[in-house]
Image (cartoon, rainbow, N blue to C red; front, side):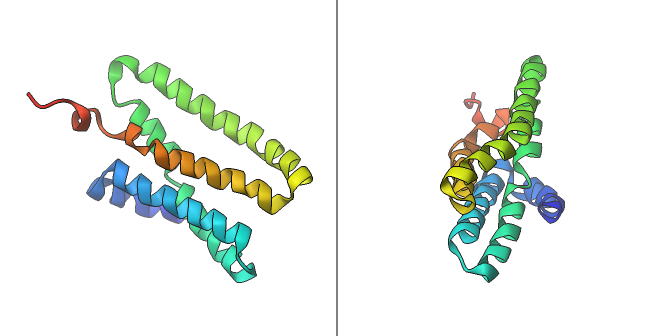
Length: 134
């Protein structure tokens, strides 16, 4: 994740949020699938790819939530709350699911959430990119 955040900054500056996050979340999905369905060596590689892919989601989400100053405070609080709920509730819920379905199958939930994130990536575009032309 550290490598993803260090390299991601330059990629975000060069290509923009939406294309970088699309690739990033696609990597997270592929990494999760490698961990769950691959042999041991692919699981190790998949974990690294998964980490790189997940590295930019929260920081870019926080940044995007602050784009419009009149609603920045409310939006940042929502993004922070989602992040903290995921941080606090995610591991116990995955553990509970892992007890009932197996740890590897429980990790598919994280891959599915990365797919969901991939679907909502356009929400982080800059406001000026979505404004109608005058």
